[in-house]
Length: 360
Ligand code: SF4
Ligand code: SF4
Image 1: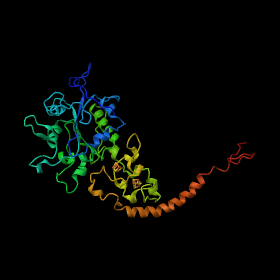
Image 2: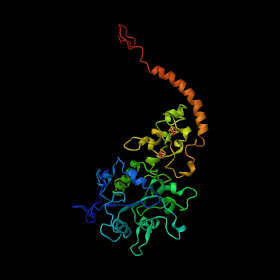
Image 3: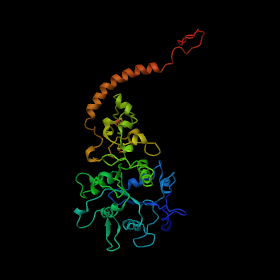
Image 4: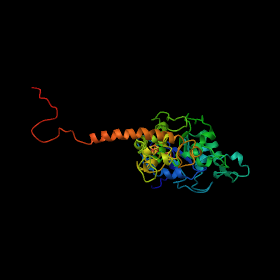
């Protein structure tokens, strides 16, 4: 991917010949995370980062992206070409409107009196780091919308496992599940470890169209996920679901059959990856041999561990499907033999045996 350079500071007001101001994207990737969501997003195709950042889609408003992964502005606080200044501008209300994107889980700074868990830039007054949670406190009330990207930011993810020392949590746990932006938009959660690239690109695009007045309020479920992306289970979109129904299960990873006995959680996990693929329609965990470990779910990872064990309930449903499937397989093989033959009236010779009756 070619890097997308945000427009220079002086260009970020009204576009030449118009009053249109850009919508700024302030991206904080300084939660507890591996930056995997930023990296995954570089593979987005529907639409691509370039199409979003350069407003290359009809009706998409102009945006100015302040995203550490690709930003050319990397100067120190208070210096020329300073990246962090955009976040201060957001706090001062100088770049209204802006969308705040949070990547990574939010540690509980209240339990770390002697220091801090994670931060983003320094406070020019004190020279001390500004914690990530402080940035959220400063910016969320001014944001048009707050978007949590990845399972760490949405629900806490791996950092929020039982026994963790940081008290990590997702953005809705931090701000409150009923929180709404000044525009009345709830926190928008796009889970995944990492996100499926197009799921995030599409959600961001939706919000930008909403901001432009050309889309209604983004539809979210009770876990704040876009409903059109997370309404179905992995199992419902899986390439291997036909094998499940026929009671045919893999015992090794080189098999094309259903992976539930190897630990796949697909039947109860909300995720569209098997249907959508990973990059440009290709891939998608169970489609390509990987069990679903439920990385999009609020209970991830604790409620799905140990991975690679048969999920609870799987034994019962697998046994039932095994019995039902063996009958179905037998009936289907009879039907399959019949439909795999041409009808008998397709032949040479002088007799018509199609059942045709002349009307005279
Ligand atoms: S591999 Fe998983 S998601 Fe696919 S059919 Fe089997 S249980 Fe369902
Ligand atoms: S299929 Fe399962 S493991 Fe793969 S991305 Fe979706 S929830 Fe995560």
